[in-house]
Image 1: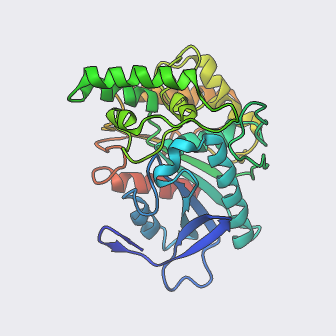
Image 2: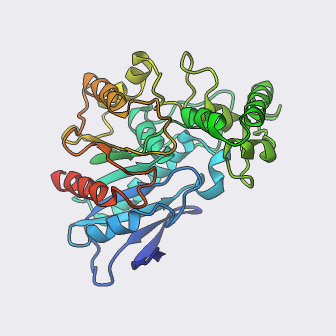
Length: 337
């Protein structure tokens, strides 16, 4: 596999029907390393699309850790018809596969980038297994998610605030705001059909909000991402917005300890990009991280304050500035585990 100018060997594993994960492995890795970091991309991401993953895998070559880059049903342009619930079930299947592959002494950590961070948090705090939805089922099997030895969130930006910021700063803000209002109205009016299938919003209109013009977007997922009734009534995807209440943080970060999915000896590592272009300038990143930390610790889980924090100068996907800093923090975190 080639990522930029860095070429790495690896193995493509099928961990479930139509689902695969690419394990970065050097050719001399026989057998493969015992511990595993499973990487989860954000909206539109797939294999090799996040620039720091291959360098991170390279940095771990001399350790006991290998990196898996996972492809979910929501990868590439599938995000608009998927959900966090489906993501975490599929991630759970990958964790179970990797544990069987590496043996009972292997450690498993998941790391999410952008909306992949929502997956990480959702994996940690949601009921296990997920509760059945009496109104709408998106193909869930309601599987019990395996426990984890660690969890990392990188670039946990709010999709709702990012959308609002884009509308205000784009070249045609009035047109974008009009499209947003029409989309919210249409999505609320008919979130799904009478026979419980997703309704798909006009892609020429969702493209005005910065979404890919060739990616189908269901009413259900759109309302979850933009969460128009927040902060009073946040949707499932709205867990990182700066105006959310302490009660909302207690319902998410505050539930990590009681769920018991994250090992009691481990900590949650959170890394925010200092120059994240998807984070509005009015957001106080340090203050927001502190709120999340307080809620996490109040719920009985541990927060990694030594390795976590804001990465100075880094953009959303840490393409250049801050990449060495990011990798160093992750490597130290894994070493601590």
